[in-house]
Image 1 (cartoon, rainbow, N blue to C red):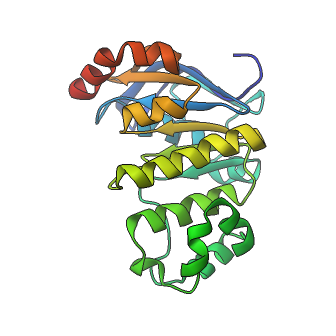
Image 2: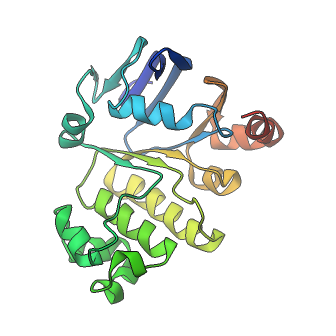
Length: 229
């Protein structure tokens, strides 16, 4: 896609001699929310790690901000990439406020994204609920004004109502700030409700792609991909 912020072009990747991705093509443009769907072991996290620079493609290339990119993750992050990992990466012994300070994000900015954080700024992160931890983790990512956000299993272990609020925030920042979002998500229908486009992975390959509406019409195939994993 022309104007893509981040793109995989014929990417194969894996771990050592173990190949996981095979010829993956996908892209995310400014202001887009793109859902990456598929079962356990389909290759979704490996895709994010390869786009982020943690894994090096064995074939193909990653393009970031319009150019072929071989930079390591920390350089890509300095240049506008933000990666929300599945484990949320908050420091449990530190307060919410100190977690924000560590990420150079002010409480004022964080609470603009998630007003619920204001009342728990002095609480240790380890005492926060799963939803509060995820709001904190996402606020840390968004508060650094990224151009691209990679979000891995945003909703893991969270109630659907909490998930809805997090997804609505991603939709809003894409619309208002032009951030490109690539979202790995287990709540298929909720993800498709806020996404512009979607890719479905199965055994390291993209087996279905299209607008969110087009993919929603083939929800049976999407669900079978989850079962096939």
